[in-house]
Image (cartoon, rainbow, N blue to C red; front, side, top):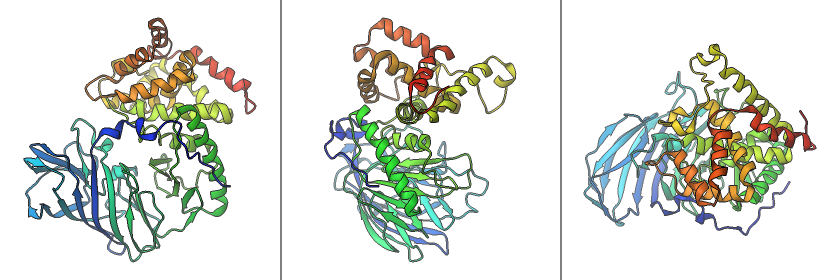
Length: 462
């Protein structure tokens, strides 16, 4: 089924991306993949630096790589290497007194990928993974150099905005995909049409289907038809509630992983489905991942509440869509709130290591990891639905723009949220009521408005 995307944006895309004022570098060079030897040989060239004085240049690269040589303007340079607080990666510190737009940083490296390299590790977005004849490397896996602008940002969250022009060779590969363009057989040049901070590499033994509006990797024609229909419905709704419509061609890749607890990830504009069987009909999964086109790429999460701003906001968009289109998909999540509330009162559950049922008071969060998985996925989205109920959809749209524009590593993420509510004109008494209802403790009764929405829908009832 053909997806009809809206061509005219109701609000210009870059006006709402917090990343619009960050540096845009140029990434060029060559990449050679040898499937037999499980090797990746790279020769990257980074240009278009901002003119500024600095003590050093800092970048990250995946720890499978060993740098063979590094130069600035064709002169060899020394560098320091450290893996401190870097997830499956290394920090490289290059002494440099000043940068300018004419500088050329060249980095040549070789790395070896294999199942043995990741043996014992749980597969996730940050690994360079080779499974079932397909090599997968996302921006989080740092398969290309990622420059650090702010040293306070965790390594897994660091992204660099690039215009890229890369030559990729893989003689043993059936197809190669880089970024957002059409896959190419065995070798090809891949160029960005607009700056990107998420460059995904997928190379190996797979087929693809291209339609007028999407590219589908490792999926059958019947699966493609179902996916296109679901994606059209979801993105159309997100365009309505956000004022921003995604017009870029969507890419959906089915790349099965051995991590059975992991559903997938997004590297805009690509959704990677890592389930053993492609989840073409699971609307909750698809709507959550598509929401990351907004929360993660248009709206950049920061602060000690990083996980709340990344995952809970994506879940909020997903819940909004499901309540309006397939309420049956949200029943289990709604009922889980009651179970979480009950578990908080039972000491046995509170003490289970690694499965923290304690309600997270966002106001008191100090470290990024304090926002638990249960909170970010099973509570945070409902808290945002609660705010939506109190201030209305139009004000919620304004709140999202305001809060993400002012997120900062130096300010507490909760303070930013409260200040944003004030800036969009929400009365102090309503803000206090929102804090009491949704953020001071988990009160199941405050979410009964969701039960009423489900009952009034044509899809399901509790």
